Length: 275
Image (tube, rainbow, N blue to C red; front, side, top):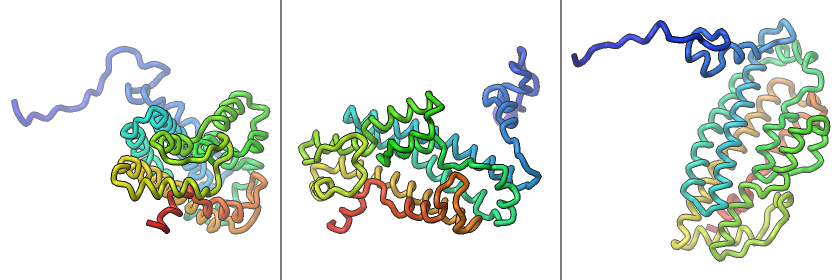
């Protein structure tokens, strides 16, 4: 019979593993997930802080998967697969930027009510976040000091430090297509390079290199969202705690402002002055 309404199943065959009430709860590990929010103070805003932070950590991991896939595709000169992975990553980045809305309205009084229980904890210490920074090419071996007592995290980050970044692999594609790209160590390409800018100028002005121009735009979409996330972080901290030092020992607001002002993939921005 057409138009018949089917009601969802309300009973399920077999035992639900781990005491899960439904197959859905079992699949997404709901019991474990909802047990991870454990505030240390009586301030209600701390629960929001924990949830927002945990959401960001999950999105960092998702984004790492997409950027790693894009990097691998570039290594194989598969620009379509690389752009597809970057496109999927854009959605994760948009949610990351929007996740600051959970914290942006937190008042100084609310944050100060639970800040003491954070101790020296800081998002700056997130190995998942640092892994993304390394993948983008913003590498610093000095930061690995934080993970000397965590061999698994240290080894993973050290490997990322020594592996060509997403941008390195994009520039390697340009080099294989005959454009002049200066060699650089895997941990060294962070600042603007005139020769790299010249290569991108050639890409954007030669119709025969249109596929590389589309790659450049996909990378710039990614870079722009990184900047949005940094700027949103800066404004949320400025509103919540002003210019006080960060919990992790950083200079707080001034450090975040410096980070927000740094262009990701700088030549893709500067080349626009010449187009």
